[in-house]
Amino acid sequence: MKSTFLNAINQCNEEHIPVWFMRQAGRYLPEYMELKDKHSFKTRTHTPDLMTEISLQPLRRYPLDAAIMFSDILTPLEFMGAEFDFSSGGPKLQNAGESTLRNIQPLNTDDMAFVYEGIGKIKEQIGEKPLIGFVGAPFTLASYIVEGGTSKEFSKVKHFLFSNEKEFSKAMQTLASSVGHYLKAQMQAGVDAVQIFDSWVGFLNQDMYEKHILPHMQELIGIAREGGKPIILYSQPSSHLLTSFAKLQTDAISIDWRVRLDEVAETLDKVGYKGSFQGNLDPVATTLNWEDAKFYVEDVLSRAKKANILNRYIFNVGHGVIPTTKFETIEKIVEHVHSFRN
Image 1 (cartoon, rainbow, N blue to C red):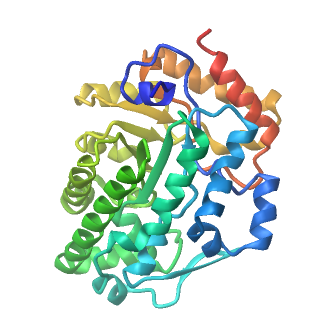
Image 2: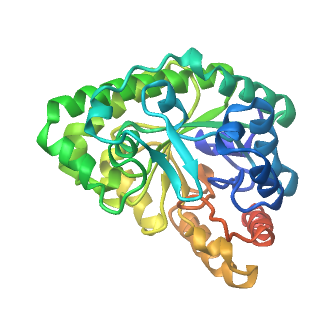
Image 3: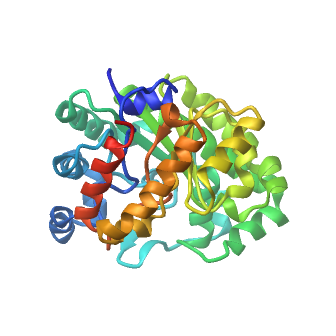
């Protein structure tokens, strides 16, 4: 497969800088909002034809270099004893708490057959364009389970970790193994790369991460490696954990907007990181008119050039695009990024 996206992950891209956007499928597109009004979130994520349609919508608007399947990191949890309800206020778990995490069950990956069917349908439509699959990392999933949704401090899940390390580790092991096998199954179903979302692990300090999270992440990645496809790690806000992330030896690390890309590259290269880089644009820039957003886009690109990582860099936002994103600005960003090296 000829792909600037895959070439960048493999550190050999000599063409234009590839670009895709986290949450590019949904949230801000009018055509997505029409489907949202007609179908519940669960219906959208569980119906292969709807998964396919939503995944394809941004590709019809922009010449993006990769597609990402439409799903949710919490979807597997409904088959593990922690089913979430989704509303305008975000995901909610009725029986949230430590007991639910203690009793979390291993995932039977066959239960996710609707996702694999969706992957197959998307692949039929996008031809040679690579498709990205994804999962939530164990700590992030555990955080949702204990907190019952999002949180400002994640104090409840941290309390469980601090006060009962043995039980926490047992739950993390179940989550890590389940997620690893789920990633492997996505690869077998046809995705060309995967991204692990560890959105909330930045609320731990580095010592806690290396002691309680890193071993489980290594197990997860070891299982997923059997699928033979590239792995991207995403987390925010977690600049204090970057050198720990390097130990995971993923194929790429997605960088949030709170740090300078060139400085991150220098830091990671010093500790022996051999992978690629992704991201770094503040998502709020996508809500601006292009004339104002251009400055922020060029700043990221210039730092990638300064760090001499253009052959292993994928342009993206440092978090997902947001509902007020301007699709006209996204169009201009893609065009500008693609022309940067020419």
